[in-house]
Length: 194
Image 1 (cartoon, one colour):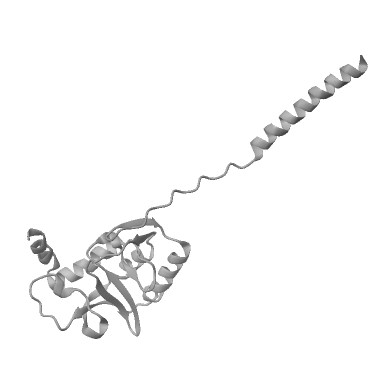
Image 2 (image 1 turned 45 degrees about the horizontal axis):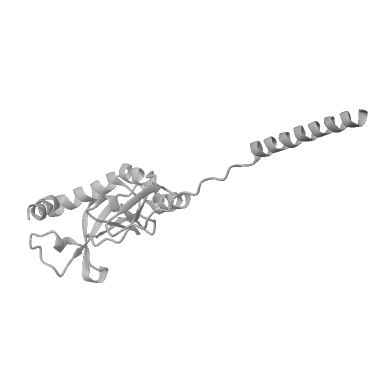
C-alpha cells in the first residue's frame, strides 16, 4: 500500500511540476513581434513621411551649423535660366543645369528661420517626380550650401546632401522669396485656370 500511495503521490507531483514548468515557460517565452507590413513602393508623385533618423538629424544640423554660428548675413541665391526669356509661364523659371544658369540673389534668410529648419523632425521618402525643381544656395562669406525645392510641398526640401526634410515653413519661405521676385502665384493661377 505504501508503494501505491507513493507512486500516486509521485505522479501527482510530477504532473504539478510539468504543469508549472509549462506555465512558467509560457509566461517567460517572449512573444514574437509581428513583422511590420511591407509598405508598397512609392509611385511617381507620391510621398511618405517618417520620423527623422538620428544620422539624418545629425547631418542636417552639421550642414547648417556654420550658418547658425555666424553673425554675417545668410543670403538666398536662386539658379535662374539665363537662356530662356520670361514668357509669362511658370516653366521658364525651372532651374537648369548649373552650366546653363545664372545665380540671382533673392534676399537674406534670418537666423531664426535657419534654426527652425535645423530643428525639423520629419524625413520625406518620395517616388519619382516630373515636377518642377528649383535650385537655391545659402551663402554667407565663403560658405555655401545647396537647397532644392519644388512647388509640391509634400516632396520636402533637400538641404545639401541630406535626405529630403519635411520643412513646411522653410518651403513657404522659399516660395515667398520667389513670389516677390517673379510673381510665382500669378503664374500658378494662370496654369490652374487653363
